[in-house]
Image 1 (cartoon, helix red, strand yellow):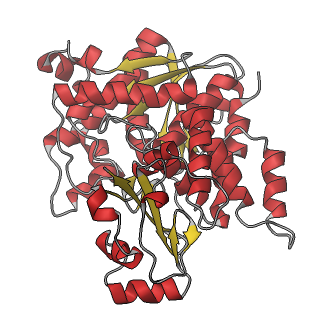
Image 2: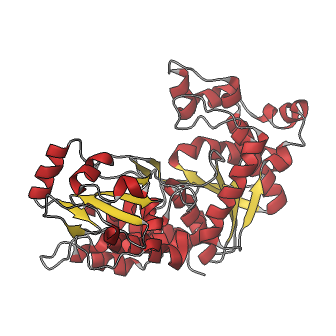
Image 3: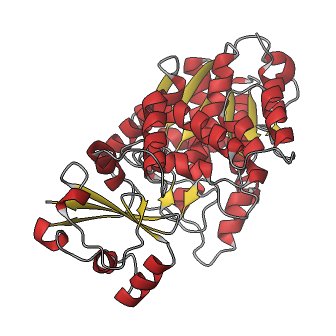
Amino acid sequence: MENIIKVLKERGFIDNMTSHELDTLTEKEMTIYVGFDPTSDSLHLGNLVGIMALAWFQKCGHHPIALVGGATGMIGDPSGKSIERNLLDAEALAVNLEGIRRSLQAVLGSDFTFVNNYDWFGKIGYIDFLRDVGKHFRVGPMLAKESIKSRLASESGISYTEFSYQLLQAYDFLYLHQNHGVNLQMGGSDQWGNITAGTELIRKVSGGAVHGMTWPLLTRSDGKKFGKSEEGAVWLNSDKLPSYDFYQYLFRMPDEDVGKLLRIFTFKELKEIEELEASMKRDSYVPNTAQRILAEDVTRLVHGDAGVEEALRITAAARPGGETILESSTLKAMAQEMPSHTFSREEVLGTPFVELLTKTGMLSSKGEARRMVMSGGTYLNNQKVADLSLVVEAKHLVGDQYILLGVGKKKKVVIEVQ
């Protein structure tokens, strides 16, 4: 059994640990858990750090548990938040839990335990909880936790509901320790206070020694928040974000971030990653090679081979002047993943190309459209348009239904003709 702590340290997963004894304790099989907030019906790319931590424990012979906070999701964790979250009702939580299960299964398969803390919190009375759990907490240390101090100093303050969150998460650890043999909880660095509250509660209740470990919050070298695109969160489930968009987000990573993300989000050997990083500094390096490897590997991990194939097919089809033959099935998929319009045949056929560019909003005026055509920056079905008098005809329809317009290298619009 490979030493999991050594693996995680080498790959940049570890920010803090409650004990360096974990190096030796993990030489035997352990049961570990990570908690996930059920605030959406899919996990996002930032959550993939926790999923990969579980996956590495799994690969090294340990048993992972993924906890979804069906109960705590109704409360909201104040950690890292400047305002109180909207509370979720039971119906919304049920939908979110099922979507999160799919996010986890994509990476972990079926060899993990999925638990919902509402299954035990839903059976505990308020008086019983105060008597059996609340008595072990002192308000002073609770107020001293960074997540609480920052909220107390903010204009919005903090509600008693959120203030009590650390008791609930601590009890999660106690429950899983007593009923599932969990002896290690992991989370992001902003969870350190909640995790240590759990280790202390277990020590006071049962005298047992359990452990906590955090990973550093992932940030991008360009200062942007990792896992966020201009359109919002980079979701893991394909019904929330198509595999093409997921692939493209990773493909656009700055060179400085690629090595770090390969260590965190893939199972590639460190030697292979280091060789790739060294190649990026050579004159012979082909730009974006490392980004392509990162995007393909992580997309395959989350969306499978089919997701990678779709992403590559659409990427090739969207390349201006590309030799890829456009098919109606590809353009139909592209219409789901980039700006698109639906027009009648009468609105499209017989329309000057420059007028269609303005009709879709790609360019603001016919004058601007003419100038762009003259400069060689416009495309019809990936073929450069140089003729100002070009009129769109039936022969331009792909599969008698679609047209792909392009302005510059990145701006694309799919038109569906009905």
